[in-house]
Image 1: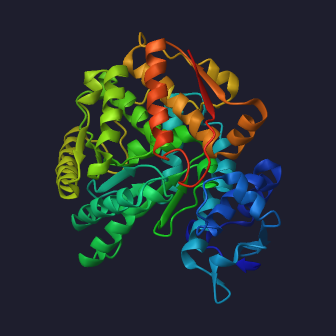
Image 2 (image 1 turned 60 degrees about the vertical axis):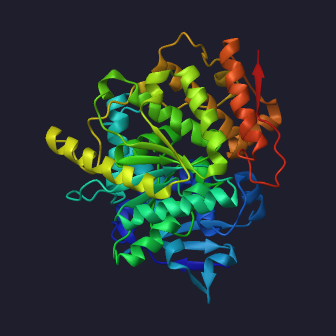
Length: 451
């Protein structure tokens, strides 16, 4: 279907100059990215996990900005019909479309080109993350910590999905809000459970925040419960947004992407500067996922050491206990931030090393050059393992990664033989349990372990 839609949210009041700048930004190479992300939002009912496949399904889809004296409008051309009801665009879809406009074009024209920000400087990168979240209206200044980040895979079993709902339900009964990567699977389940719990508790302003980035959203469309969609420029800024915006994290079963998130957070928490900082972290799943967390725990122990294992708890098949621990953990976070004068809405005191901030481009050369040695300090090894997992995610679902693998073969990873055996075994367990791609999809590994 085709339609012209009016703006909502922060895009409602723009000057003619701002609208013109958005049009110019779109025409200078960002239009394809903008179009791809908008299609993902419109195609939320699609159950695939391949950006290239989705783009090929709607080759004639287009979107353009219309300038008017009172602001702008969006013209949708040949959009997926599922996004409309009785000829009108679904309200949640409409809101998310303007979130895409805000974060892809507005941020590009106002932050990326701003001489105040050096994209290679760690402090500036943190301020960029802050500016993007603030521009999206994500901060509620006087509200005590109440946001739980939920990580987990998009490709999980029905039993695991239902378990994520139960955990979300018990978190919601305790008036906690949910932040996820905004996609399906373990990113949708906790929101669905919390949504029901908030209804029972008569919570009128539930927050279901989805943090994503362009390469991910194109493959994993936002689930319909997300009511605050925020798109960060790259995976590193997305991960930093999770750990600075969220107050505690629950990890459900997942694949390479979930492993990347775990390694990122543990690498940060292993920094001596963050040793005394409370950061509730729970790994959980149904009884059938016990072996999954045993594998993850063993891998962390053999690579990052016992200190890393002490930063999280593993709770199997007990949603109520997870919620209690997270509620208690957030109260500890509240006291800590009050004592140290830190903001409730953004964790300024957390030290994030530049190894975890600078964007990693998963090319064949960069993946082959990763230093994977057990002799590295734990936080540096965590940073390189995180990059390896990020590359595998790109090769699995991101359009540019899929094309690179098709043209040049699988990424090659090499390092200490003992470490490479551990990596190979962990990745193979993800493959065996269909955690790399949706069940029913044929998975051809995008990586090769070179002994």
